[in-house]
Image 1 (tube, rainbow, N blue to C red):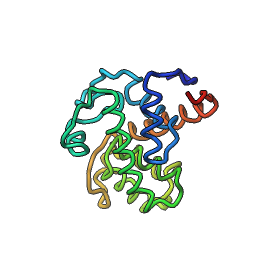
Image 2 (image 1 turned 90 degrees about the horizontal axis):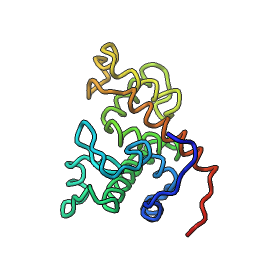
Image 3 (image 1 turned 90 degrees about the vertical axis):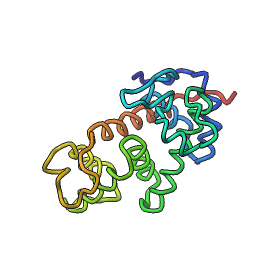
Image 4 (image 1 turned 60 degrees about the vertical axis):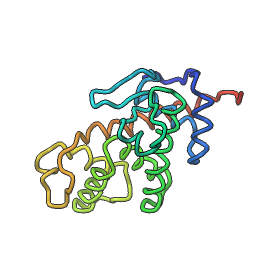
Length: 186
């Protein structure tokens, strides 16, 4: 991943959709960079498609009449819509908006149930369940270890939690770098 944001043909679409959920467009751009490297034709090992790596079932849930995940405009709309749904959920639980975004991104990557498990583990281990950094993120990273995913407070079992931990960190690393790169509004 590069440090400097390079103009993408999708910038206008990203900006338009990010406004709908009140997020900085560069945060969505960082997410797309992590998800697909801005390769619209990418398909993951799990079957996620496009720029924002939308699962076909998620696309159908979000937009029953148009599940064209291979079209950049639709893919970005669906991904941002999912971010918005997750953010609406987390901002009612997590008081700090940046922390709520981090919980939303982790949920986008690994699923809300696993993030809830990590929150319960954080609380059980005397960590703050409302803070992602150095609290819940530490617990999500451990959810691939038997002693953690078999814990009595865990309801959704094993997950590749280190991926979610790295996912959120990579997005915010890129986002911080993108903040230093101002593009003219065209």
